[in-house]
Image (cartoon, rainbow, N blue to C red; front, side):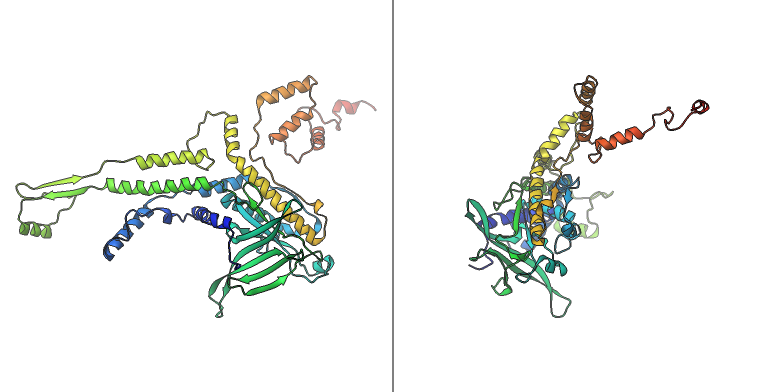
Length: 481
């Protein structure tokens, strides 16, 4: 079996991934069926039909609900910075986390975007080639540090695992890498493909080998080392919209993409309908002989809307025919927009200004519930690979803290709840700290301000109209000590 072979689940989902990518980019004209058969008739007829089909597709307006929904979900998920604490030896990851120069914040954003878009992404913690027995001090002396490489769903073409002691263990991952290489003249570029094979071999250790599509070895088999020791696992993981396992999850944008495509198709039909119904067809009858009619059209052709009179003979007549208006496509487009909004799509529709705040919060919470799951998966995926980096560097992975915010909406202050809390504090049922905690939940008090900070600030402030207790008044100054 060649290294280019693909997994059955890959084959079953690659077209869906491509559809979602094209919808995000706006490359959707190929998904609109031909208006007429462009393969029928002679060459002139076929060319006219091809032009007609092209005009039909270009007339439609593509409103990219898929892209706006993706940007909204990623924006909500990253609206608050994650809490990240790394040991001193791993501080470099804040500014350099991937081989192509991503910062850690950019890595988080890219991983989040990939999972929202196609529900699948892979991370490989790359161990630079080092000699067997090399210590951490020797590795650090040459600035050889582990980095995390991001692989889109289309690049993860094959995988396998086994059950070992009741636990699933990866034993094979094949990654398809596309790169550009300059030709011999130094100016032109040629796109090439290589395949990275990650595997657990018979010796029980992690091996890496790189081949081209013909099976030629580009990088010989090697055993990456972590702190001078070979690994017994593959440092590659997949993240998904539902679980971080090898099962291909459904993208949260998939249903929106199909509706968005139907919306665009209806827009093409609607715009074509406007042209068809907005232009009148002129029909002329005349009793003039053919020679007189030909001479008339040659000397003074009939122009619609012209302020002139035309003689068409005794029984001549001019009529215009126009189709009646058809709003079916426009009505269907509005219905699709409402459906997209109902399933969580980012669509700006008319809002109910009288809706209670609680109702609005509940509706937004329901739409963002899939995003919470994705955030949890992204957090788990990146935290896992931060620990792998720590293992390579020989530092304690328990010193790593990585937590992403999972509450995207600020909780509004409820006047009734606040009034009840104050009453309970005054009556001695609750301590004053309950009110402060409530203010923190509603972002009135920032989370990083402690009770001690508040007490110190309250003690230092001077009530309006009262003298500073550290300064003596004129009357106090006249009284002897």
